[in-house]
Amino acid sequence: DAGVIQSPRHEVTEMGQEVTLRCKPISGHDYLFWYRQTMMRGLELLIYFNNNVPIDDSGMPEDRFSAKMPNASFSTLKIQPSEPRDSAVYFCASRAGGAGYTFGSGTRLTVV
Amino acid sequence: GENVEQHPSTLSVQEGDSAVIKCTYSDSASNYFPWYKQELGKGPQLIIDIRSNVGEKKDQRIAVTLNKTAKHFSLHITETQPEDSAVYFCAASSRDRGSTLGRLYFGRGTQLTVWP
Image (tube, rainbow over all chains, first blue to last red; front, side, top):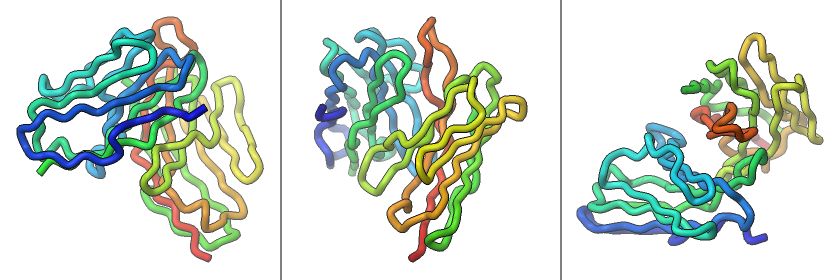
Protein backbone atom coordinates (compact mmCIF):
# COMPACT_ATOMS: atom_id res chain seq x y z
CA ASP A 1 0.00 0.00 0.00
CA ALA A 2 1.42 3.39 -0.99
CA GLY A 3 -0.14 5.12 2.00
CA VAL A 4 -1.82 8.52 1.89
CA ILE A 5 -0.48 10.47 -1.06
CA GLN A 6 -0.38 14.25 -1.06
CA SER A 7 0.65 16.63 -3.80
CA PRO A 8 2.46 18.84 -4.25
CA ARG A 9 5.10 18.40 -1.50
CA HIS A 10 6.02 22.07 -1.66
CA GLU A 11 4.09 25.04 -2.99
CA VAL A 12 5.26 28.62 -3.17
CA THR A 13 2.73 31.13 -4.40
CA GLU A 14 2.11 34.83 -4.39
CA MET A 15 -0.48 36.44 -2.19
CA GLY A 16 -3.87 36.53 -3.90
CA GLN A 17 -3.31 33.44 -6.01
CA GLU A 18 -5.43 30.31 -5.83
CA VAL A 19 -3.83 27.23 -4.29
CA THR A 20 -5.09 23.66 -4.61
CA LEU A 21 -3.76 20.86 -2.45
CA ARG A 22 -4.51 17.26 -3.33
CA CYS A 23 -4.89 14.05 -1.39
CA LYS A 24 -5.38 10.40 -2.26
CA PRO A 25 -6.43 8.40 0.80
CA ILE A 26 -5.66 4.75 1.40
CA SER A 27 -8.02 2.53 -0.54
CA GLY A 28 -10.87 1.31 1.65
CA HIS A 29 -10.55 4.08 4.22
CA ASP A 30 -13.89 5.80 4.73
CA TYR A 31 -12.73 8.84 6.72
CA LEU A 32 -10.53 11.63 5.38
CA PHE A 33 -9.15 14.54 7.42
CA TRP A 34 -7.40 17.78 6.49
CA TYR A 35 -5.06 19.27 9.13
CA ARG A 36 -2.92 22.37 9.18
CA GLN A 37 0.29 22.48 11.23
CA THR A 38 2.01 25.66 12.40
CA MET A 39 4.41 26.40 15.24
CA MET A 40 1.90 28.77 16.83
CA ARG A 41 -1.21 26.59 16.71
CA GLY A 42 0.08 23.04 16.39
CA LEU A 43 -2.10 20.54 14.51
CA GLU A 44 -5.49 22.05 13.67
CA LEU A 45 -8.32 20.02 12.15
CA LEU A 46 -9.78 21.94 9.23
CA ILE A 47 -12.44 19.55 7.93
CA TYR A 48 -13.22 15.86 7.74
CA PHE A 49 -15.27 13.62 5.50
CA ASN A 50 -17.00 10.29 6.03
CA ASN A 51 -17.87 8.34 2.89
CA ASN A 52 -17.11 11.47 0.85
CA VAL A 53 -19.58 13.61 2.82
CA PRO A 54 -18.26 16.57 4.84
CA ILE A 55 -19.03 15.96 8.51
CA ASP A 56 -17.43 18.87 10.32
CA ASP A 57 -15.95 21.95 8.65
CA SER A 58 -15.94 24.13 11.75
CA GLY A 59 -12.16 24.32 11.62
CA MET A 60 -12.03 25.93 8.20
CA PRO A 61 -10.63 29.39 8.93
CA GLU A 62 -12.68 31.47 6.53
CA ASP A 63 -14.63 31.39 3.31
CA ARG A 64 -11.34 31.53 1.43
CA PHE A 65 -10.90 27.85 2.29
CA SER A 66 -12.93 25.11 0.64
CA ALA A 67 -12.60 21.33 0.48
CA LYS A 68 -14.17 18.70 -1.72
CA MET A 69 -14.19 14.94 -1.95
CA PRO A 70 -15.75 14.01 -5.30
CA ASN A 71 -15.04 10.31 -4.83
CA ALA A 72 -13.54 7.87 -2.36
CA SER A 73 -10.04 8.18 -3.78
CA PHE A 74 -9.53 11.92 -4.09
CA SER A 75 -9.90 15.12 -2.10
CA THR A 76 -8.84 18.72 -2.61
CA LEU A 77 -8.30 21.66 -0.31
CA LYS A 78 -8.47 25.01 -2.06
CA ILE A 79 -7.46 28.44 -0.81
CA GLN A 80 -8.64 31.40 -2.84
CA PRO A 81 -7.27 34.01 -2.49
CA SER A 82 -4.21 32.93 -0.55
CA GLU A 83 -2.61 35.13 2.12
CA PRO A 84 0.80 35.00 3.84
CA ARG A 85 -0.83 33.83 7.10
CA ASP A 86 -1.94 30.67 5.27
CA SER A 87 1.68 29.54 5.15
CA ALA A 88 1.85 26.20 6.96
CA VAL A 89 2.19 22.48 6.41
CA TYR A 90 -1.11 20.92 5.38
CA PHE A 91 -1.65 17.25 6.13
CA CYS A 92 -4.23 14.84 4.85
CA ALA A 93 -5.02 11.72 6.88
CA SER A 94 -7.36 8.80 6.37
CA ARG A 95 -8.68 5.94 8.46
CA ALA A 96 -11.03 3.02 8.26
CA GLY A 97 -13.72 2.60 10.91
CA GLY A 98 -12.18 2.07 14.31
CA ALA A 99 -8.56 2.13 13.20
CA GLY A 100 -6.02 4.89 13.78
CA TYR A 101 -5.19 7.67 11.37
CA THR A 102 -2.57 7.37 8.63
CA PHE A 103 -1.09 10.71 7.65
CA GLY A 104 0.37 11.75 4.35
CA SER A 105 3.74 13.44 4.06
CA GLY A 106 2.17 16.88 3.91
CA THR A 107 2.29 19.91 1.62
CA ARG A 108 4.46 22.80 2.76
CA LEU A 109 2.72 25.96 1.56
CA THR A 110 4.52 29.29 1.46
CA VAL A 111 2.57 32.38 0.45
CA VAL A 112 4.76 35.38 -0.29
CA GLY B 1 -14.99 19.79 22.58
CA GLU B 2 -12.04 17.88 23.97
CA ASN B 3 -8.95 19.68 25.27
CA VAL B 4 -5.64 17.79 25.37
CA GLU B 5 -2.68 19.22 27.28
CA GLN B 6 0.81 17.79 26.75
CA HIS B 7 3.99 18.21 28.81
CA PRO B 8 6.84 18.86 28.55
CA SER B 9 7.16 20.78 25.30
CA THR B 10 10.84 19.83 25.05
CA LEU B 11 12.74 16.92 26.56
CA SER B 12 16.43 16.09 26.33
CA VAL B 13 17.82 12.78 27.54
CA GLN B 14 21.06 10.85 27.29
CA GLU B 15 21.10 7.75 25.11
CA GLY B 16 20.02 4.76 27.19
CA ASP B 17 17.94 6.80 29.63
CA SER B 18 14.15 6.70 29.80
CA ALA B 19 11.80 9.42 28.55
CA VAL B 20 8.28 10.12 29.79
CA ILE B 21 5.72 12.39 28.15
CA LYS B 22 2.44 13.16 29.87
CA CYS B 23 -0.97 14.24 28.60
CA THR B 24 -4.25 15.16 30.20
CA TYR B 25 -7.67 15.32 28.58
CA SER B 26 -10.94 16.97 29.55
CA ASP B 27 -13.74 14.88 28.03
CA SER B 28 -14.59 11.83 30.12
CA ALA B 29 -16.25 10.30 27.04
CA SER B 30 -12.90 9.99 25.25
CA ASN B 31 -12.02 6.34 24.81
CA TYR B 32 -9.11 6.13 22.39
CA PHE B 33 -5.63 7.55 23.00
CA PRO B 34 -2.99 7.25 20.26
CA TRP B 35 0.57 8.53 20.21
CA TYR B 36 2.25 9.79 17.07
CA LYS B 37 5.90 10.34 16.20
CA GLN B 38 6.78 13.03 13.68
CA GLU B 39 10.24 13.14 12.16
CA LEU B 40 11.53 16.19 10.35
CA GLY B 41 9.82 16.71 7.01
CA LYS B 42 7.39 13.83 7.50
CA GLY B 43 3.81 13.35 8.59
CA PRO B 44 2.94 12.05 12.06
CA GLN B 45 3.17 8.28 12.32
CA LEU B 46 1.17 6.19 14.77
CA ILE B 47 3.50 4.39 17.18
CA ILE B 48 1.17 3.03 19.86
CA ASP B 49 -2.40 3.47 21.03
CA ILE B 50 -4.55 2.48 23.97
CA ARG B 51 -8.27 2.17 24.49
CA SER B 52 -10.19 3.04 27.61
CA ASN B 53 -10.75 -0.55 28.67
CA VAL B 54 -6.99 -1.07 29.10
CA GLY B 55 -4.66 0.48 31.68
CA GLU B 56 -1.30 -0.21 30.07
CA LYS B 57 0.08 -1.36 26.75
CA LYS B 58 3.65 -2.20 25.74
CA ASP B 59 5.43 -2.60 22.44
CA GLN B 60 9.14 -3.33 22.81
CA ARG B 61 10.73 -0.15 24.20
CA ILE B 62 7.60 1.93 24.28
CA ALA B 63 4.64 1.76 26.64
CA VAL B 64 1.54 3.80 27.28
CA THR B 65 -0.39 4.04 30.54
CA LEU B 66 -3.89 5.38 31.03
CA ASN B 67 -5.59 6.63 34.19
CA LYS B 68 -9.24 7.24 33.31
CA THR B 69 -10.14 8.49 36.76
CA ALA B 70 -7.53 11.23 36.63
CA LYS B 71 -7.96 11.70 32.87
CA HIS B 72 -4.30 11.43 32.05
CA PHE B 73 -2.12 9.14 29.95
CA SER B 74 1.60 8.86 29.43
CA LEU B 75 4.16 7.61 26.92
CA HIS B 76 7.23 5.85 28.26
CA ILE B 77 10.29 5.17 26.11
CA THR B 78 13.03 3.03 27.66
CA GLU B 79 16.64 2.61 26.53
CA THR B 80 16.34 5.65 24.29
CA GLN B 81 18.37 5.84 21.09
CA PRO B 82 19.31 8.85 18.92
CA GLU B 83 16.79 7.70 16.31
CA ASP B 84 14.03 8.24 18.88
CA SER B 85 14.65 11.99 18.47
CA ALA B 86 11.45 13.48 17.01
CA VAL B 87 8.30 15.34 17.95
CA TYR B 88 5.76 13.20 19.78
CA PHE B 89 2.05 13.98 19.85
CA CYS B 90 -0.63 12.56 22.08
CA ALA B 91 -4.28 12.60 21.06
CA ALA B 92 -7.71 11.69 22.37
CA SER B 93 -10.90 10.69 20.64
CA SER B 94 -14.46 9.86 21.56
CA ARG B 95 -17.36 8.31 19.70
CA ASP B 96 -18.72 10.08 16.66
CA ARG B 97 -22.03 9.41 14.90
CA GLY B 98 -22.10 5.80 15.98
CA SER B 99 -18.55 5.08 14.82
CA THR B 100 -16.18 3.54 17.31
CA LEU B 101 -13.88 6.50 16.79
CA GLY B 102 -14.42 10.18 16.21
CA ARG B 103 -12.07 12.98 15.35
CA LEU B 104 -8.73 13.17 17.13
CA TYR B 105 -7.81 16.08 19.38
CA PHE B 106 -4.04 16.54 19.50
CA GLY B 107 -1.70 17.85 22.15
CA ARG B 108 0.85 20.52 21.18
CA GLY B 109 3.70 18.06 20.88
CA THR B 110 6.97 17.27 22.68
CA GLN B 111 10.33 17.69 20.98
CA LEU B 112 12.43 14.78 22.24
CA THR B 113 16.18 14.93 21.73
CA VAL B 114 18.33 11.92 22.58
CA TRP B 115 22.02 12.74 22.91
CA PRO B 116 24.56 10.03 22.06
